[in-house]
Length: 205
Image 1 (cartoon, helix red, strand yellow):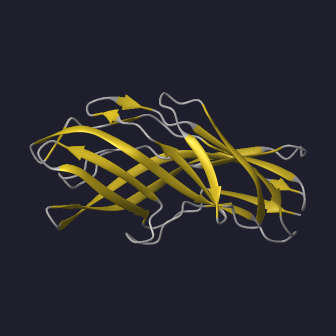
Image 2 (cartoon, helix red, strand yellow):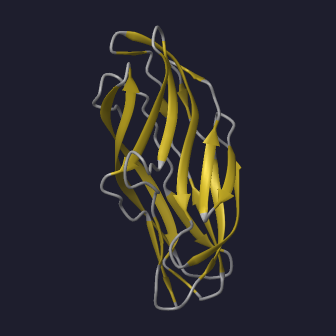
């Protein structure tokens, strides 16, 4: 996974929503989901755009009862930080944040982070779940962010619980990060999924 821009090639295999039910016997289903990220950073006052194509696997119960507890686990995959960009050395990436809205037709209860090869934390604010990996993660190395488990309560019958990434534009992103480039400094990068696929779907009855 590599951005097409030579300015930002910090490939991140980002999370996809993975759901399981606490109290139901409904079987889980899994499928790979492709997510294309449209990203922009600014160097010397000039905006540089790039794209990242990621593939993740989402697992969710096929059905849940209204009012029941459902756990959504967001499982990231391994990715590599490039060692150079536009002929400049990439020192590291840091402050990686991934924002996931509370899945549609559910009420957020809690969220936690676990695992991964780099430490990260989860916070909830304004109906969003934000995974933060502070780093820094050195250029030329591979890493796997922590998994995120989101506990929700299923909403009304007849409307599915669906999971998507946040982000609709560069100014309303679903993913942000900082790339530290030699002789340039820190480059703030904002990304949004374009298009934004549904990651998981659970029927509520």
